[in-house]
Length: 74
Length: 131
Image 1 (cartoon, rainbow over the protein chains, first blue to last red):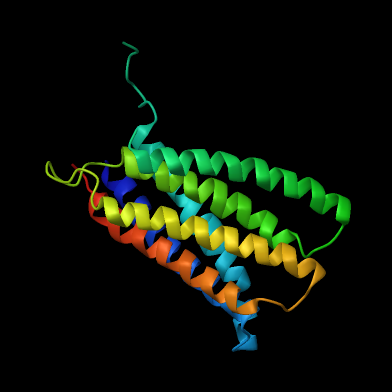
Image 2: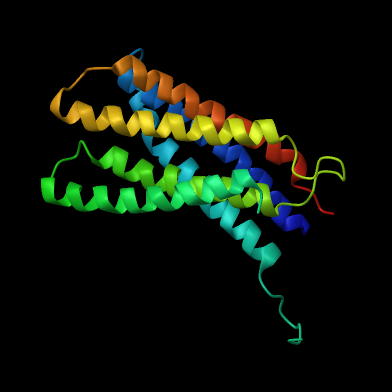
């Protein structure tokens, strides 16, 4: 795996942890309300989960796995 | 393809169909209560679950003895993710008719999905390496 993919994929795993933690707080608060301010974290949950986790992982894996420039087909 | 990957991929395809179906129902109903289960069926059930399965299968090997890391953690991530998501969707659909019931089970669902994410990150992190 090239170094740039390593950075993308490790960062995406960090955002997965962040997105899931925020999502768990939001869902817990929806079921058993404990702090109204938790709802303010919703945009951060969406951004961390979609851009930070999914998009960043796709970018990292695409850079690693897609055919390279300058390679002649076999 | 390892068995855990097969479960993840097959389940993710089922969630895709369920999510698109709920999307149609949601448009017909015009209600916002179905939006959260609809989005989570697609983003967690389909996309995230497909990534969990394919990453476990295709990411660089950890070692010769344990090429994919812990199989127990991978199974735990799969079970917890699906139990948590199904619980969430079932309760939120139930709450359309009976609001504010079974809220405690939403907390259980939150914990299950969070643990699934944690198990996946712990198992996958050491496999993300240059060589």
